[in-house]
Length: 172
Image (cartoon, rainbow, N blue to C red; front, side):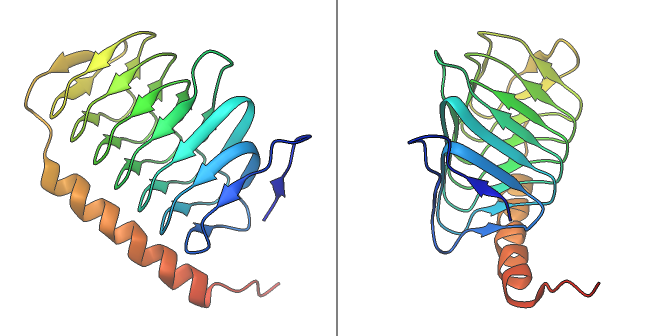
């Protein structure tokens, strides 16, 4: 797996995290315990810092970037779906950003909230805890997130990380 230092910016990856061999991690990136980073995901901490909490999945094709003004922080037990773009935002514990969504600068996604598939959450927006953000640009629907779905997916990816860590092998 390509893991790069950028000058004195060196990734810090917990020993129990799983980073797929086709993911790319660059610079000031911290990845917590039992988190999983999947194929073709790119975490590029060049202009600022990226923090990924424990038991969080960053799924296939996702891009996580940062800005000098705003670090990108993803909490514990989060699900970040396929082909997501996170940039200079804060995703609180037990939240989900669904496939194809874009979450931009200085956005705050509250605990237990869901950003729906293909939603675009514009700069400086707030998705309150337990809310559902849908559409492009996103509109907020209060108290519509299903916390049990997030919890199930988060634990499923912890299990997948252990399985892949133990048994993935290149055959050609």
